Image (cartoon, rainbow, N blue to C red; front, top):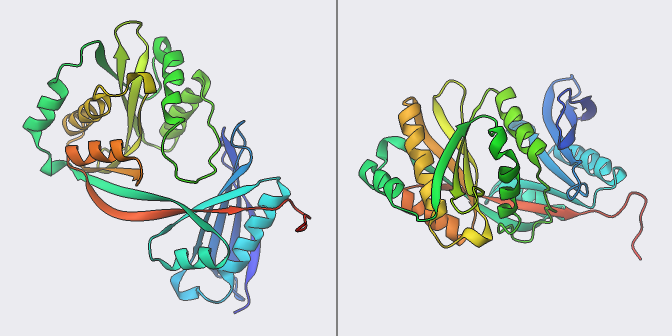
Length: 301
């Protein structure tokens, strides 16, 4: 099969990065695959690119995937990137494709689902009602309230030491504008962002948070975006407390929801324990792969 690769333009504006897109088509012009390359532009991550590549199952082993990958890697090199990351299902064709082209497994992600119909409501209410001296729960929809914006941005430091295996993910710098932009991006896609946070009574600062994105029509499955507690506030059960409250709110406010989805690094044992205790059931595993890039035009020494 003759494969043609066409570069496209992504019209969307992304505050934290930009995307390049390629379409693979056969000799008759029919699409057979695509590649999306996200180039992170924020300080701390501007060395990194994230790849998503798909080829129609009926069109595989004809060179489309290799051509798409070549185009994406060339673009990453010419943009000065030193690492490309991507994901593939464990044991999948995609996994074999990546390994054969030099990608290295750096992280295993465990995906899990909580079926809301199976929720142990008395246990959930007991978890939410459990006293946590020195802390209180707050919650909001959409963009963080102005009076909490600065401390909410600071609380994202809790993710700096999140277990990421050997992934060269860089560092993410958060400020009030960035947390607002993240909420606006969810709304623009039609999602409903719900946040539950634990506030330290001593100074009114946010000690931890958990975020849940619900589909705009309130049906199907909602997706957890992140749960984190600042190091100085760990050991008090705040992660379990906040996530239990998020589940309780989701059940009460969105009766059409079927379940809640989450993914956790396999070496993030504390969060895996929280998910297990709350009834999340593992569904599948995905492996994060990484490829180190030499500079464009570089040669081996």
